[in-house]
Amino acid sequence: MPNEIKGEEQQGGMSTTDRRTLLRTAGLAGAAGAALAGTMHGKFSLAPVSEAQAQTPISMPKGTDKPWWPSKWGPEDEAGASNHITPEKVLDAAKWIKDGKIYKIGRVYEGGMPLFGPRAFTLRIPGGPTGGPFGDNKLVYHDEFLSTEIGQTGTQFDGLGHIGIQLGKDGDKSEMRFYNGHTAAEISDAYGLKRLGVEKLKPLFTRAHLIDMVALKGGMMDAGQEITSADIKAALAKQNMSESDIKPGDAIMFHTGWGSLWMKNNDRFNSGEPGIGLDAARWVIEKDLALTAADTWAVEVVPNPDKSLAFVVHAELQTKHGIHNHENLIFDELIADKKYQFVYCFAPAPIKGATGSNGCPIAIT
Ligand code: UVW
Image (cartoon, rainbow, N blue to C red; front, side, top):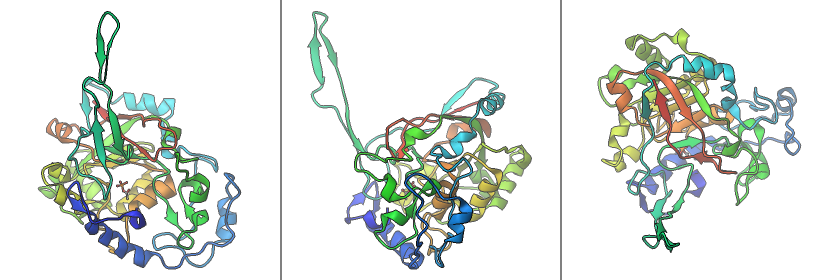
């Protein structure tokens, strides 16, 4: 995150300087000396909104006007919008499976893929083969060693402990708040998050609506180009889909064309991206959706049209509403087959205390 981005090295094409400049600009404007005095909820037991609001002090960071906890899923909840996935929801989603075709909508993980800032992805297989031969049958085997931010590289599903908002002074972990008001002081640990780890999420199996922004705009969108709720409505109409068919707990996905730069022009891919802004985020919240996704590395527009804001859609959806986010997906085959509605299926890797998950999401039609 902003203050932790160090070094001038080039990672996956984008220099960390570029991203740091972007983030510092936003950080300066957003850190308006917010202080939240006396609103600490007890350890893991959260104050009701009314009490928290009553004690809310004068200033909050830009983009935040009031505390966002407890969540609609209860003050102890750590599963966020994955709670939408009930047996009824699964059965309803399954009605969309018509031809039984499965599309992989995740990228292949490999060295050379674009990475955010100084993140790394390094796979090694020592030996070759790693071990053996064993027994008279002379068995040999390979094991890999992987060094990476496992939930935050390549196709990545953001967990609820990933994004928080600093409400207090710099360095005050007791007022760095995450989903459901959990603080960095409570959850951060060098050996994995003590709360909000990705293992707490329920597997997702839900109806997904794919918005083809390339078709709507007539070509690949550009960095900094915002997808608005009006764009979503226009794309739905163009694709003969009805807005009223989008139900609570569904997923919305955006094909912007930006993914065509993947490993072809990592510099440009990393330099920013098209995506949803706060207007579309409010539409997602109003619809009570479970997940946003896109063929980009953040799903949201970067830079934000309001240059003082950084990853504000992440905070709005994930931190404040527990709505999940899946980044760096690939929709080319679905688009080619004109499949805009399908079942999205993904079980986050249950790595205790992890901030997100790698893995291969699938679309079933
Ligand atoms: C950040 O970590 C800021 O972004 P992302 O979730 O897109 O990796």
